[in-house]
Every structure is written in C-alpha cells, then in structure tokens.
Length: 194
Ligand SMILES: [Zn+2]
Image (cartoon, rainbow, N blue to C red):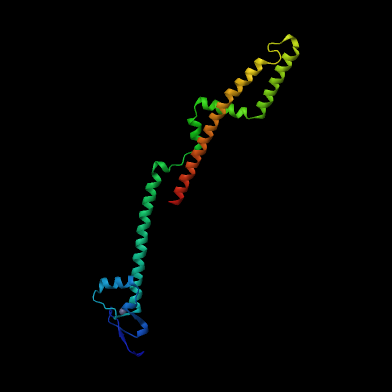
C-alpha cells in the first residue's frame, strides 16, 4: 500500500492517509465494543480515523470512571451500614469497668493495691515487732500471747488465707480489662480496614 493511498474512515466517511488512523482490528477490545454498538456492521479490515478513535476511547474511559464511581458509592453505603452495627462500637474500657464493678470487687481492688505496697509491708512489720516485743519481754505486764506466739501464728495464717483470694479477684478484673482492650483494638482495626 502506498503512502498517498487514501483510506476512508468507516465512521465519518472522510478520507485520511494510513498514518492518520488504524484498522478496526487494531483497536483495543473495549473501544471496538463501543464502536460496534453504534456501527454493528463494521468489519475488522475497516479503517477508523484517529479523531474517532480518540472519541470512542474517551467514551470508554468515561464509562470506566462512572463504573468506579458507582462502586465507590456502593462501598460507601456498605461501610456506613457496617459502621452503625452495634458490634463495631468502641467502648471506653475504663469507664465501663468503673461502672460495672461491684462493691466487693472495688474493695478487693483496694485491698490488693494496699497489700502490694511498701506501706503495707512496713505497717505489718511494725505490728509483728510490737507484738513479739510486748509478749516476749512482757513489758507493762502485757502477755496475752506468750512465746512462741501461737495466737500471732493463727492471725498470720488468717491474713494469708484471705489475702490470696482477694488478689485473685483483683487479677480477674485486670484480665477482664485486658480482654476488653483487646476487643476494642480489634474493632479499631476492623474499622480502619473497612
Ligand atoms: Zn473518522
């Protein structure tokens, strides 16, 4: 085919040189599809000018953008729906804990906190020393628990027996708090993922 051999554009009937367009078969498949809608009889060997190719390519891009937009709107709606579901709510863990604590649990927490402090150890040591010195040396004639301090022994056993379950109770609440925090974190990740 010679260079000055003019081609006729199938779409607008104007004449162009071969370099000013393409054969229908050379066009991208989606563009071919759009042209076929308007020109069902077009053959693969028919010539289409660059202007028309541009026109239909732009139309194709336009539909792509619109499709994308529709998908986005759909996604947006789905997201909004999911977000309003109750199980996506993020709770103020500390607030919930504060209001769900029973009186017993509050006392357990306070005792556990006090029992794990230096104040407690020092006070305890002072009581022990006072008890032993008072009864051992029988100062001021006081000797309600003579050596080997059997009553003190009983008293210490009772403190240990009660302290253990109180600490466990307090630890259970701490575990609850951790679990709620983890759940919150999970919901936050879900939300950001959405
Ligand atoms: Zn044309």
